[in-house]
Image (cartoon, rainbow, N blue to C red; front, side, top):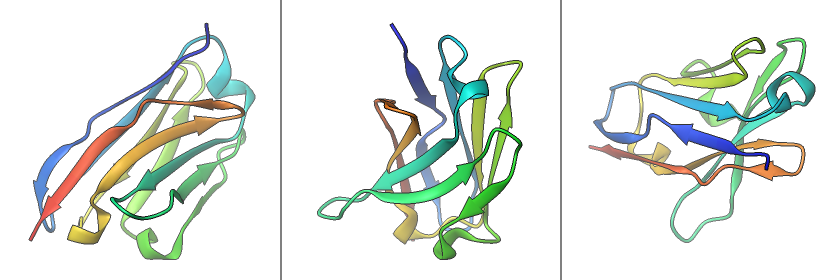
Length: 111
């Protein structure tokens, strides 16, 4: 069974950093474009960052310059480095590839 498993969420003060990781079973990471989404309470799920198989990255404007997505095809993992976190970054963060979703990891940023 294909699985995506996120880790690395937590509670951090504004201005702090967290690094999220998405680990996949099989060869999901090396085969597909991988995205990070987030969903805050009462809001729609939002695409945050995307990385192609070749490593090209794209970001939503609100996180440009603060977040960095990377992939390790050999290790079958994708990471999201989040710096200078803001309270508005508070959400559940999900890893997504093809038709597969992880269970999400909570990120809470306090002011």
